[in-house]
Length: 169
Ligand code: ADP
Image (cartoon, rainbow, N blue to C red; front, side, top):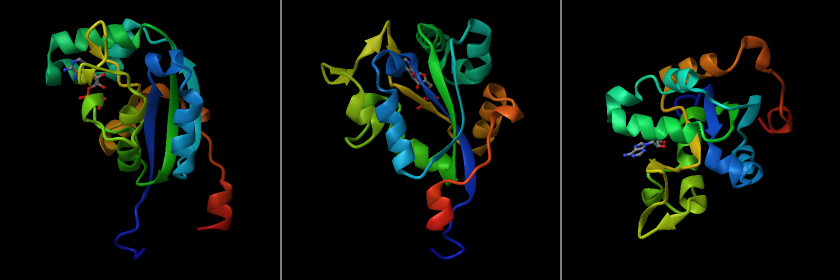
């Protein structure tokens, strides 16, 4: 990689949504991120309440309307989520690529949403009518910074070296 094409080390927020946790997919999902040299620098489990959901999805209602907001908020509060901060080169875009498109019927095979979402009649299986797409991942740098700060205190984030960092790079 030349200096121009080399990515920057970024941190991004990932949530294993209630459907991923309830289906026992946490280990397999996490494996995909670790396999791509994304380093876990923070993790916790949380049952989101209405207020916290509003803070996490602060722009969703404005962006997609109150019906989508209400469906998503209800879905996110139906069970606990596992939150992760992942660090790595171009972590924000890399995680989004591994996760796949928002609507699972459009997510290609090989992505988490494409491989693990349950499909029905060619569309996404819904819980209520929310899109049960297993994962949340920050969309861009600004969102990642806001979301990491919302979910994690500074002393809940860790600096350490993985073996890959120590021996390969
Ligand atoms: P992403 O999670 O891929 O970044 P968005 O930020 O656009 O996607 O939407 C946030 C979440 O809201 C989605 O992951 C999905 O769970 C839910 N959602 C989005 N669009 C719809 C929709 N049309 N109907 C129901 N739920 C939706």
